[in-house]
Amino acid sequence: MRLPDFPWDSLAGAAALAREHPGGIVDLSVGTPVDPTPDVVQQALREASDAPGYPQTWGTPDLREAVAAWYARRRGVPDLDPDGVLPTIGSKELVAWLPTLLELGAGDVVAHPRVAYPTYDVGARIAGATPLPADGTAQLGPARVSLLWLNTPSNPTGRVLGTPHLAKVVAWARARGVVVASDECYAELGWEGEWADQPVPSILDPEVCGGSHEGLLSVYSLSKQSNLAGYRAAFVAGDPALVQRLLAVRKHAGMIVPWPVQRAMKAALDDDAHVAEQKERYRRRRDVLAPALREAGFVIDHSEAGLYLWATADEPALTSVDRLARAGILVAPGTFYGPGGARHVRVALTASDERIAAAAQRLSGGDASTSR
Image 1 (tube, rainbow, N blue to C red):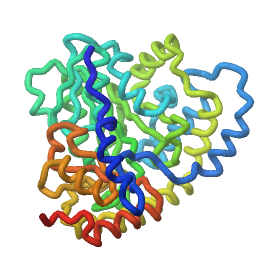
Image 2: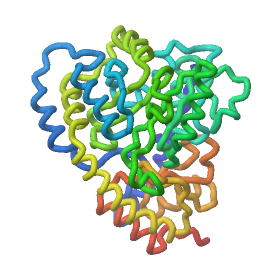
Image 3: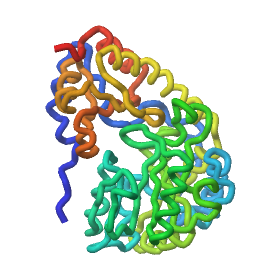
């Protein structure tokens, strides 16, 4: 098994250049939350800190019920069976290990979007399966696809797949016995068009799946909506039979979410107020950063949801990275997400109000102008 180099390690030079700016670096390269973990979550963690025994791999029944209630309340999924819920140690580990947990290997194909989070590709390689980038089922041809990854809203592009699109994918997959896993961890962060005032659709929505979750998995993280990246708090939900297959392996492997984190997850899922508050923070930052990028000569594509602005100055991605680094702004090149990102950069909203304002001032002031 040969894995690619970890992409962010290659940003060391650009990061060093950005740090030389007199006003300091504005790091918009990684989508790591910077705002406080909500008090209601911190309190739940403290109250569960006396945890001498082993926690349940499957999660406590009340946690799984809280997940099901959240899907009903926030995602338009009224009939999720709590037996089809499994807490995970963050969503990245589930993305990386899902092909292995499903016992895929040589001869199996794992399809994923062409411009995509690199861990979909890595997870296929870990299992010994073949990763296949494709933006539609027509591009898959005769490939023997065993697992199809969707990512909506997308990281990095912010694109949302609508209900009709998702329904067509589900019908295609069921006709061929393909498992569909939908990475939906930015679903609470819709900004534009119809997603500004209604939930981003889930693969488990009855209008998508016809009321049956057979062959479907929704992957979700609380890192973004609840500032829980440091807790590694996430879950997968959907087909109870698939979840039981994952659970059987995870029991043997000791892949268990710690008890205090399970308690914190339930508290986060039960409280919608902090989610609305955090979304408003990101909205303000987006409203500051997006026009400044445009003023500096960038075009923002998609980005109707999620934590990023997918921007292009119609030049090689690394050229944009270096030019922004000279202005003290560090971003991720689109090449991290596949050849389809060769002329884009991903700009995160996850910095403090002060740092976002500093970035906007540098962009608007011509520090990162595309004029040459």
